[in-house]
Amino acid sequence: MGQATPTTKLAVVTGASSGIGYELAVQCAGQGFDLIIAADEAEIDQAGDKLLRMGVAVEALEANLATTEGCDKLYAALRGRPVDALLANAGRGLGRAFVDQDWQDIRYVIDTNVTGTVYLIQKIARDMRDRGAGRILITGSIAGFMPGTFQAVYNGTKAFLDSFSFAIRAELAETGVTVTCLMPGATETEFFERADMLDTKVGTMKKDDPADVARTGYEAMMKGERSVIHGLHNKLQVATATVVGGGVAAEMHRKQAEPGTAEPQKSDG
Ligand SMILES: NC(=O)c1ccc[n+]([C@@H]2O[C@H](COP(=O)([O-])OP(=O)(O)OC[C@H]3O[C@@H](n4cnc5c(N)ncnc54)[C@H](OP(=O)(O)O)[C@@H]3O)[C@@H](O)[C@H]2O)c1
Image 1 (cartoon, rainbow, N blue to C red):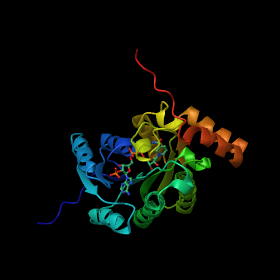
Image 2: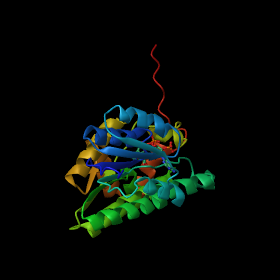
Image 3: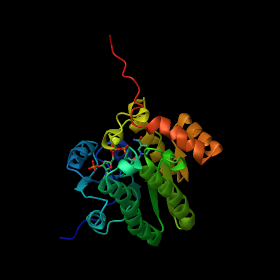
Image 4: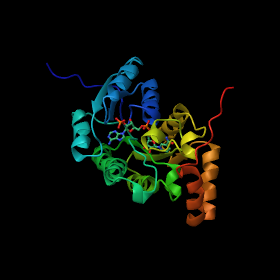
């Protein structure tokens, strides 16, 4: 018996086990996209189970997207099915002073945020270009506009992604493929704990809701916008960093990300 050709649109969401990526997958499911979701750890299955309850087809895949093999595994899971939307969101942070960081951690951040992301986007964007249709959302960051004192490598990877996103968008103009860069500011996810930044101001201050950030990104992607910064407070941060220049912005970042700058926790008593 031949395999039925799916008529539903397909979205691929990376880093969908938690945080912004999970909420991006919720947005896609809410609009009736079938989903292929991927992350590095087994929690992706629980995310898949929750998304299934939204009434769409979901395939959850454990794949280390810092590696070529992991990205190939995700691409193979498509089994040739066209991707209507690629939401390239998987990413890792890394706090503390550059010279004190572990090289393997640094490497993992670069391999996940830059190498794996670019590799996967190239494979899927090429298919989209050949088909003359597709939407790509890249989760960059407002961090890409600021030298990341005590988050130096991470901010560098996000500067790369912001720039890369704008460039391939321009290259793909007139092909039917749109590229949108979602630039969140500090958002309430597992990101800061995983980046070992719970003793910093940014790690402990009130942050944006990942569901709101994801809605902003999803809507911008569907409109085919170039980029979107979630929230006025984040737009102001970017404007300030741009006006004051790199040296001052690097000192501003220190106040947010230097270990020992955590906000005092308010007690209930
Ligand atoms: N939170 C913020 O303040 C903030 C601000 C701006 C931009 N961002 C960006 O938003 C994106 C999502 O982060 P988040 O805040 O939602 O953090 P999160 O809750 O830690 O989610 C990160 C997701 O990426 C996945 N991931 C990380 N490394 C991976 C790898 N090598 N292979 C496969 N999956 C991998 C994680 O899955 P596993 O746990 O299975 O590895 C998880 O699903 C990231 O690109 C981040 O840089 C976050």
